[in-house]
Amino acid sequence: MTHKEKINYLRVATTLAGYNFEGKDLDLILELHSLVLRNGGDASLFDVIKTKSDINDKYEERKPIILKQTLEFEVYPKDLGEHNWEDAKKVCEDLGDGWRLPTREELHLMWLNIESIVGFVASAYWSYSEYGKRYAWGQNFYNGAQSSSLKNATFYVRAVRDIVL
Image (cartoon, rainbow, N blue to C red; front, side):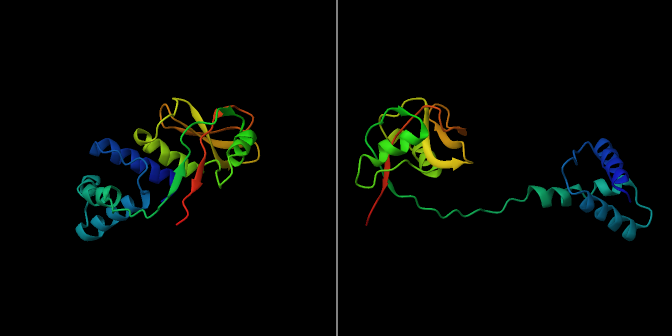
């Protein structure tokens, strides 16, 4: 069966079943239809539709995901003003004692725990994480979005440092 025939088959199956197969595995759908034909001999498209629960099982089954990541760091008690990215790195380092610009992940964790960290403004903050030569990642503390921006843009700065045990 050609790719065009598979797509047409998918459209017919979607229309007749009232079930959206778009984005589903065409080969799985066709395999199920072939199975019905082999087992029943004179199967129709409606026989395939009976197996849509098998298709759902493949795509809707969710397995638990285990995330094991521990980020432990200290957050400086106040903002260090607004700076471009290069200056942001420097004002953090100028604090001494291991203070630095946070990584993208650390900044996001700070956003997730914003209730327990005082002094953030509803604006964008720089992270240390770069996105190519001319861009770096920032975290918006108004809506939680992360985006890359030109390094010469001006964002707020909050320093962090590693916890030494």
